[in-house]
Length: 302
Image (cartoon, rainbow, N blue to C red; front, side, top):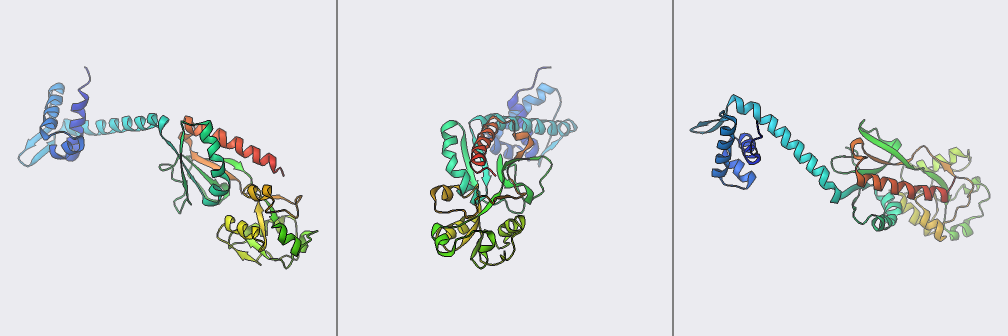
């Protein structure tokens, strides 16, 4: 048996969902009469009635009730595959936390756009919120791997280590130094990237430094603000070497203990749903971003 006409199938499926021709006509942008004719053609093609025509509207027959879910599912598959195929010229949707976006990702994106002019990045600079990474809204995301449990279908690829070392403005070092050993930091103003003070606690614990209070100093809502305060000479920040490259290379921040860098257990990762990793745009971005991260890790080798 040859397939029924596609327009007739669409007309029946819409009319069955709306329980009438009016709603189907509005959805399909045709007249009520056109929907009725297409349904009639389908019934003639199949040789069975799909609707009971009642004074107050339409009612599905047994054949109609069985046919409706089959069509609805099939049209859903077609729509999903069409969306997947059309992605070749669509946006690559990425979400990235603000500090990492501003301090690492955004300065590099122009190079990606030059290398892949046909891939359009749609970057959302924001936090994930309580629900976490939403794979229906974004193709890829950046996140700290050790901070949240994720669904089994979300894969996390380690990208950048978190490497810490104190950093301050040259003026602060001149006025409050020299810092020959970590204990010389006792009594100096520490700058923290968050009220939890985890940055300084991690470094002081790693190097077994005594006499320096990790709870002292000023706390900020993010690393970007803490770094800017350090550049202004107000204190010494625990610098994330991957995220403070601009200041370190420009000399607006210096590291008094260059050989004392500690890597925490928190890796910045690229995350995405398993079925997205084979998408050509995702593959291109993934390979490119790992090349970029490898350069930075080599520059600031532990």
